Length: 421
Image (cartoon, rainbow, N blue to C red):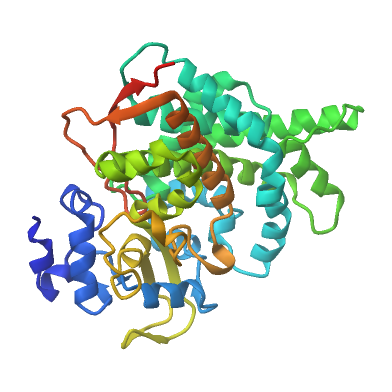
């Protein structure tokens, strides 16, 4: 048992969320933060840490909690770091998660047409075929590295199909995602700004060429497809549509965020099931339960540990006064384990259903890709449990990522027990 729950207020204020010691024991730390009142100023991060369900939910829904945090961050930087961050900002200033209304409203109305559950239904056969192709590629093997060989490989292949990209680009997608994540997700790694900026330049050049080439093809009379790129290019014909810079930025965001989110969701869910054998057996016996079960797995250990907001104006929350301009970390994983909202929150209970979890956020900034992540994860486990009778957790040290905004194992070896007959 970790001693995190016994930390004093002074120690909690000095706590750093992007260290190995924190990431290996996040839930005892979250409990300590909730016990300290749920709203605490972090001296280490110069930010507010919001850990209780009610306060996190209130701020997710508050128009006074802005997502436009990049500009102040860039303006406060100096020298070479600032120059490097400007490269990132020129792309990320068009990213939906970093834009407030009214610009946010315009972009979301355009993008949600492709990511609404009804629109995604047409892709289910492709997604299922992709999962089966990955699983069949394991052949007679009895153990895999689940994160790289399945949890990332599968959604990355799906997104290449969405974009109309060659499937052999998956390796490059993995490199790009890892590089950008060092900055966007707050790794604290030395050299993260330069590495992330380098990856961003590569992606911007790649998608810039892709947009220009496809635009020329369509102008020359090529038949428009249902691929995401063609659908985004179609919006350029309307007054409120996307321009070429916004399309490039959007493609970069989706290519980075979609495989990253689903991979984290899959690997966290697999580890949760391997650590809760009765629930794994329950799904193996009745695969119709997988859809509802995924909601509880998101609550139990979802893909997104936190989101960041900035106070537009002074506000009161949880008995604390937050000043305009101060940064706020909304700890989603802590909120989803708050016993004031979820009885016995440490128990993986498929009877809860959705139960009000906020694993993908809430309000106008609810994760755009949540329906895709849900669909991919449901289909992935349906196919895994159709192919394999059981899974095993080989003896290994589980090392967790320690970015501010990501929390999942760096790797997870999983044993495979095929179904007979």
